[in-house]
Length: 227
Ligand SMILES: *Cc1c(COP(=O)(O)O)cnc(C)c1O
View 1 (tube, rainbow, N blue to C red):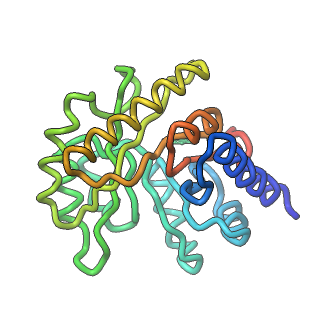
View 2 (cartoon, rainbow, N blue to C red; view 1 turned 135 degrees about the vertical axis):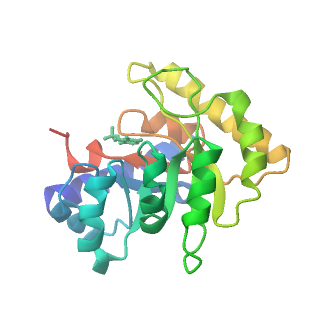
């Protein structure tokens, strides 16, 4: 077994272990491999080992890789900051967007999504800590945004995404992820149908899984540290 394959199965085992340790069904949690900055050869190796969903932050970088990997039938997730002049490229090349944070971008993504493709799956990025360096909307902006999204035919609203500050303690990670879960539950009580909580990276996967993550976005733990 290659090193990458070994790390991938280690991460799979961790996800399973963390889920069982907090009484969750491990099959409710999907592993999204974050392949930003990684070469096509790494992605292909992980795909051959059974990994089907990959996430990219940098559009230019992603556009170099996606066509080369066409034969792999990969499900591509966009997790970078959205720029208005790039929404068409995102709508044309990805199945999921985890970082939606404005109605303007939502309207463009829906309008630019091809009729021949299934609706684009989207998560709203929440910025619950007010960190300037991070994208996402504040809690009070969520309800009005969700109401407007309902009218966009080529988007499928799936859930919420967030990231804790890099320096967050384990208990702060738990607090933040629990807050995202409660927000999701509140929205569903108000009639929405959000089935996704995109939370958990290499450094905070355990807290995220215990607080209800349904998608974890893991880079370093699979591919090694980024240089
Ligand atoms: C880079 C990145 C990840 C993966 O982080 P790791 O610490 O490498 O697991 C997850 N989500 C987003 C939005 C990222 O930018």
